[in-house]
Length: 531
Ligand SMILES: Cc1cc2nc3c(=O)[nH]c(=O)nc-3n(C[C@H](O)[C@H](O)[C@H](O)COP(=O)(O)OP(=O)(O)OC[C@H]3O[C@@H](n4cnc5c(N)ncnc54)[C@H](O)[C@@H]3O)c2cc1C
Image (cartoon, rainbow, N blue to C red; front, side, top):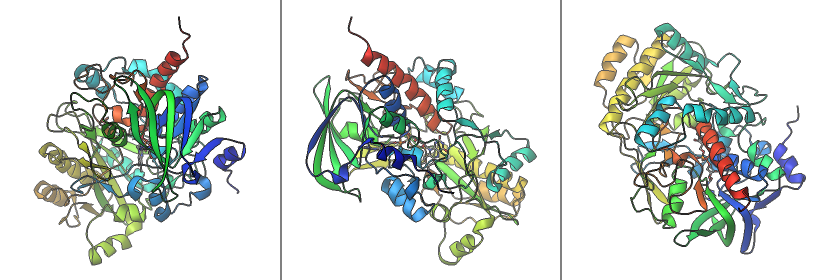
């Protein structure tokens, strides 16, 4: 069956798309609103503002790719669609970070799990982080709007074996679990979401809000990296961007963007980096601090029967048994999920080399992987990471603290207990020096004594949050609770960098809902007739 490619069709119908790699001379482009970044925040903002009749330009550092080129191959997807070819790391290299870099941002490559912001997080923000107007009740209509827009609904099919093990372990132990809601329409259940959906089922920004904005006359500029926010004391008056070549190197051509209003949606890490590089006022030294990752531990398990974790919807079950167990401010909690099990992804997130690694990869199809995402940013010993500028870009220093390691040990134990309860023959906590463990009794003892340390223990993240927090108190927040800058009338931030803590849940729906609310308020403000 031939797959229709709505992006190619849209381009053929006359969408305004400028591929900056093809631009030979400096240009200035103008609109009512210019948005930096086309991911979860940028996409939703673009649709809502163009629907309100405003002219919109979306600037994206990555390329415009579509199903035509999504061929389910890791070796092509990671260099083409991810920041730093999916090999981004924290300063000490102890945490591997995944972030998208293409039109649609991380939503083009994400795994479609869609969860509303947990009540515990919202209550903590109201109490401790001077955030107003973001209760579960006030956000409800915005979540409903985005759930409908992106066809977010509970996965109605049998989970794949990888997720089924998570469910069976929870059932056997009497632990909480939930069937995941996903933003898909007509999903083929193939399991390759992380490489760009080859059948256009994933309702990413690439397939939904960005085309809607382009249909309303918005302009998309791809392969253009915004490098500077030009500003006076209280107004932004332009953005400078570098055109990038097909291999995403600066071509030397400079683009200038002018607008009435500017929105930063470059994502956590990149929004604060751009603000810092542009020397935006930050009297309380907030920018880039408190960058959160949901630092994630992995536990492998060998089953007798095939697991084939590469096939089928990558995430369809999660367990919140341990996330908020001790309250928001108590010990760090962790959410249990599974990742897709593709060879490069898993080979880069396991340990060993030579024979031991070859043996593990030889049994790849029997490998079940459970992950524990640690909820960072609430406990006093969990302040997240700090982004700083370097000559070539940025660096993220994320110290893994005692509170984190304490959670990690508990998480490894929970994952092993769950995997044995689900029928695993052996469990392998992914940390240097750990052997295959053959029973829960053996695992319990070994995990209680195991050495946990940066670079020994594999830690990963696909959830980058914070670094440009919202809130009413200027001592702790860069923008207010609606995402408007505390320092510039015509600047907003709409992306995952707004969160003052991590969420304890996968972030995309929180970004969609909060952006829908804030972009709608902004649209009202920008289209209001002067009195
Ligand atoms: C592999 C993977 C799996 C994930 N799975 C899930 C999941 O199942 N469920 C879930 O809820 N979340 C998931 N996430 C996370 C989720 O996709 C992100 O939290 C969300 O997309 C972040 O939205 P954002 O708008 O903050 O940034 P992004 O979506 O990352 O978009 C930011 C965009 O800005 C661009 N940009 C950055 N700097 C510049 C610049 N200077 N100039 C121009 N453009 C710039 C980037 O190239 C990028 O395209 C996953 C992420 C990854 C990487």
